[in-house]
Amino acid sequence: MTQGAQSLITVLVADDHPLLREGVAAILAHEPDILLIAEAATGREAIDLFRAHRPDVTLMDLQMPGVKGDEAIKSIRQKFPDARILVVTTYDGDVRALRAMKAGACGYLLKNKLRKDLPNAIRSAFTGRACIPDEIARAIAEHSADDQLTQREVEILAHVADGNANKEIAAKLSIAEETVKTHMGNILSKLAAKDRTHAVMIGIRRGIIDS
Image 1 (cartoon, rainbow, N blue to C red):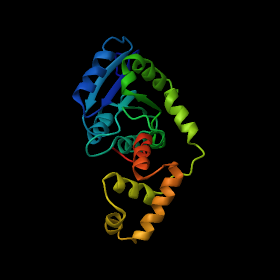
Image 2 (image 1 turned 90 degrees about the horizontal axis):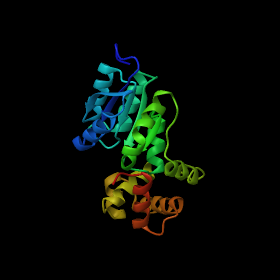
Image 3 (image 1 turned 180 degrees about the vertical axis):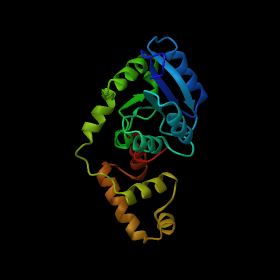
Image 4 (image 1 turned 90 degrees about the vertical axis):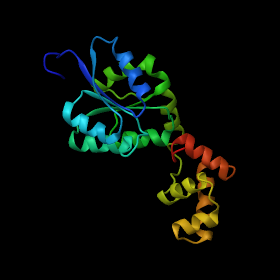
């Protein structure tokens, strides 16, 4: 906490959208026990500002230019293991949420619920309590027993999402077209997808690949 303001919870917000940062500032301006002390527009800036200000709680978007949010979280937690970082995002996919938690986030907050939930989420993070929305917790539980896609399968699904046919994917990855077909069969099975398009939709929704 900042000297001379021992009762305040200090906050850093990292998001590449100025309107979101302004919204967070407006919400927190009405909270007498929370003080927004810094704003970052990139992952690299978030790392640097954390080092400079040592906020009690950091609000981190995942989709940012350059250093991604989960990479920034991992970098901060490696140097400052006690850092409390809340992911603030529009994405409610279980895979994306698990990735963020594995990187070191202590909670996950959806942007459409900021006005209602942000202050208490910050207070929860400050006291060391995890904060995960019910819908994300349910999605994590629902898919907990699923076979996870391998890194190669994720890579192939991303190429499919970009509109590439099996032959084109094979050329890009320097593997046989039959190998791509085998991987696609595994992807469809693991995701319980009807076809390639359905697999891409599931992959984006769950946060396996980026939209």
